[in-house]
Each structure stands twice: as structure tokens, then as C-alpha cells.
Amino acid sequence: MSHLSRATIHLDRLDHNMRLLQELVGERPLWPAIKANAYGHDALIVARHLVATGYDTLCVAHAPEAVELREAGVGARLLLLSATLPEHAGAIVAHALEPVVCTGEMLEALSREAQRAGREVALHLKVDTGMGRIGIRPDEVPAMLDRCDALPALRVRGLMSHFPRADEEDKSFSLEQIGCFGDVTKQAAGRGIEHFHMANSAAIFDLPDSHLGAARPGISIYGLRPSDGIANPRVGELLPVLEWKTRITFLKEVPAGTGLSYGHIFRAEQPLLVATLPVGYGDGLSRRLSNDHDVLVHGVRCRQLGRITMDQSQVDVSALRGRVALGDEVVLIGRQGSEEVTADELAKKLGTINYEIVTAISARVPRIAVGAGGEGR
Ligand SMILES: Cc1ncc(COP(=O)(O)O)c(C=O)c1O
Image (cartoon, rainbow, N blue to C red; front, side, top):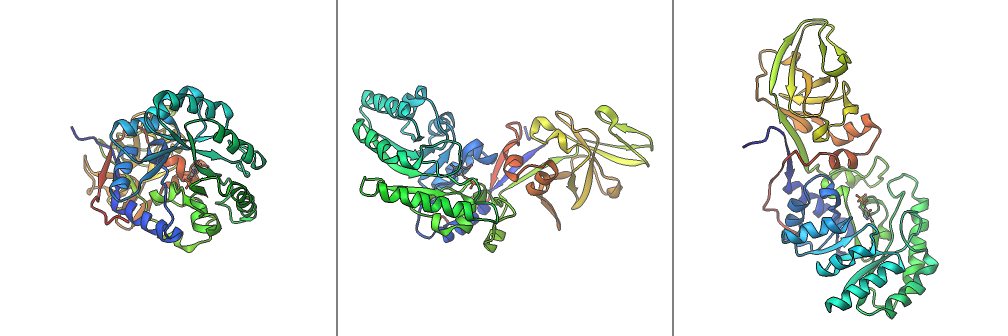
């Protein structure tokens, strides 16, 4: 059965974005972030494509995300970027995942489980150079490395950090972090650590000194800007990977005075041709966009009217009288003719970031991959 809404995932644009990012970091490996269902783009589609085009290391947030990918046959190295608890150590070992670790409890649990399984765990120690979320303090690094050395079956493959403000115009805090992490890497030199890594998308564009031994781009692989504060003009070359489309399921002329949808927060001031769409907040179209966003129909911007409900919403297609019909395509995010609705446009209306817009598209919306057959790296 064909779904009436779909998110099209343009793999050729993913390839384009990866090539651009690769040019920015040169020979260094890119470890794309595909957490949260690949920022809403479908982790399995994106993982399979990235692996097929030569990427051998991917980042997710949580262990269950990685286990799902493993069970679907993804053989890449899978980093777990978020802190987790010792109860996940068994699964981490069993599925050969690479956790980011910042507690002694986790080190001990991993060592125990790895010995029990007769395996070795590769892990990445997280150093908090200013993100303020997870991680050990820079001055704790030598002692933590000693602790790792003392525990059997552990290998510290990476030492990493993360930026809270790399996407801002003022890079001074990020530059201080790079300096701090540089000192940490000097202290850790000669201890067999393969990769020092800290760069996210914003840092890939604007902070070349942070590229180090690997970079972890997320939002940019999907063709979205980390923010408006990126100085590098090449950010303008990114191509959005996701388009979200639906179809008109109902059309009606309404007389002036008609109230539409719950609460009648919209009332027609003149006769209108109104189209109903099978998309609502259950699909990830925020109810807070009610009466306040546009969609594209036949390349024309049409205003959404009234409350967005769980499963349906309505739009004004009066400008298209005589040209619009049941089943016509409607673009929620993407381009049609010369018009475009971007995730950034919706994010600005909602006072949020493009990351949240695409990540919020729910599981009910099928993701359809197109444009495969990229050229690889
Ligand atoms: C630790 C870590 N590294 C890299 C990334 C990728 O960041 P971005 O999507 O801004 O490129 C994230 C995303 O939040 C992260 O948490």
C-alpha cells in the first residue's frame, strides 16, 4: 500500500555533502553521526549508504541504536556518543560497539564483560573541555589512562571532546577548547591512542585546527547548516538530503465565516478553497506551527489554516482554483518549482533549530531512498 506522506532521502545529495566535508578535512576520516534515526533521515538507509560508499565508522548516541544497526547487518565501527550505564556493558561487548566512557564504573564493567567474553573492548575517553555535559576533567586524563591500562581487555582507541559553541560567530571559546584539548593530547602522547577527535559540523567548516585525527559531522551530512553563524562560505554548498511530501485528501469550498479545525482558531474572512492533508503532529508536524506555516502546492506557497491535529491539517489553496485536485502533491519541506520550504524556515517559526525539525519527523512517515549509486569517496 502506498503511503500518502513520505520523506524522500536523496542519497546523491548525501554523497555531495560527504565529498564537501571530506574536502574540508582532507585525508582525515569522517565518522558521520547517524544518531536519532540519522537526524530523522532513517539510520539504516543512511548507514548502509555510507558504508557502501567507503565510510567504516559511524556514530550513534545510545547502545540500542547501535544494536539495531548491528542486527540489520551494519558491520561498521559504531561509536556510542552518549554516556551509558554498566548494565549496557554486556551488549556493548557482544556487539563490538565502541563506547564513549567517562566513569570508572563503566570501565570496570566493560573490562569484566570483555574478559568474560574473551574479547577486547575499544573505547573512547571523553574529556570535558567546556561542553559541560559529560566527560572527565582534563587534569583527570593521566589517571584515567592509568586506570584503563590496569584493567584487562580494554583498549583506549580514542580521546575525544565536544564543542558547545563552535556554531557561534565568536569562536574564542572554541579556540580555548582546542588549546586545552591540545594540552591533553600531549599528555596522552605515546600511550597508543589512535585517534584524537573533537570536530562537529561547525568546527569542520570554521575551526580547521580542531580536525585532528578524525571528525564527527552530523547535521551537515544531511545538507543542513549548523547555524547562521558559520563563516566559511562553503557551508552554502550543502544540499538538503530530506524532502517531506504529502498529498491532498480532501478539497472543499467554504463560505466566509467558516471556522476550521479544533478551537476554530482560524475563521475564513472570505470564501476559500481549503485542502486537507493527511499530516499532523503525530507525524512530527508541530502543533505549534498551527496557522503559521506554508506548504507548496503546484509551486505556490499556500498557508496552513487552523489547528494542526494529530493526523490531519488544512491549507488554503484558493489561489489554485481550477488547477488543484485530490491526490495532488504537497511539499512540507523541500522544493517545488522555484519555491522552497526549508527546515530552517520551520525552525525559525518554532524558535528551535533545524536539527529538531527533521529529527521530529515521526516513524509513521516512511523514508524512501532515491539517488543511490553515488560515486563514493
Ligand atoms: C559528541 C558529538 N559529536 C558530534 C556531533 C555532531 O554534531 P553536528 O550535528 O553539530 O555536526 C554531536 C551531535 O550532537 C555530538 O553529540
